[in-house]
Amino acid sequence: MSRSIKLVIEYDGTAYGGWQRQINAPSIQAAIEDRLREMTREPELFLRGAGRTDAGVHALGQVASFKTNARIPVEGFRKGVTALLPRDIAVVSAEEVGEDFDARFSARGKLYRYRILAAPSRAPLRDRFVWHVRKPLDADRMRAAARHLVGRLDFAAFRASDCERRTTVRTLDRVDISAQADEITIEVEGDAFLKNMVRILAGTLVAVGRGDLTPEEVVRIRDAGDRTRAGVTAPARGLALVHVRYGAGRP
Image (cartoon, rainbow, N blue to C red; front, side, top):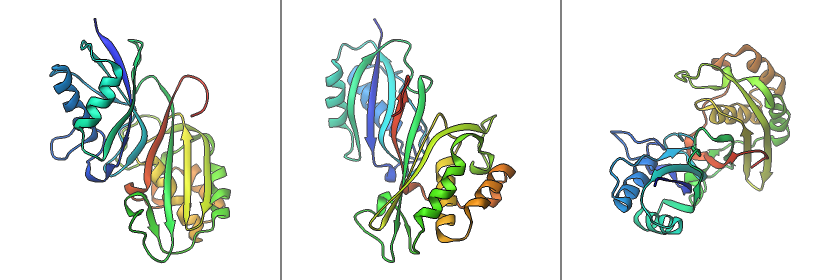
């Protein structure tokens, strides 16, 4: 009898070409999927992730699911797969779920976090996880701009040029800016995201924090839907998928 298993996964994405299995680069999906196939002896086992994080993007709470006929206890999946994985990937929890659960299609929202180091010198112990910006950033200006990005809006100006989504309307429940010591954190929570959307939002908010854009210009960029007027696509290293929401309620 087939079972459905849900995994919550943490990873440092630095060494990987992203979540999705690919021919010319290592991926998170392939690393975990291959270990599961070994454990279950099911060569056709398929692992579906909640989101396809890009090359270099990290996760604290990526969710994936798979179906199996193996009788391995769920804790056995957590311990066994983690023991076989490289140290930059870990399964932090595993549970058996209903057969209709699908990590991607059952998701109702995601929370992403983008970290920025605003300091003259780089920080070697954080370098893999932050965007180093040498000039100071005005967090209050960034907060003022972020308020214009909350709600059900058209985010055409904040997607990659090769994004293939048919609609660019998305709902963001919050875009929060926090500042502590030399680090600024952007948290973005919403129902769904376009390709590179959070990284382009981060690049645009950093441009506001530097004084290159005003908060009011962000409104005009948003309404015009013109990607060329928004900020740069922030580096992948600063981004992490924090949580995936299933059912009602916030992450």
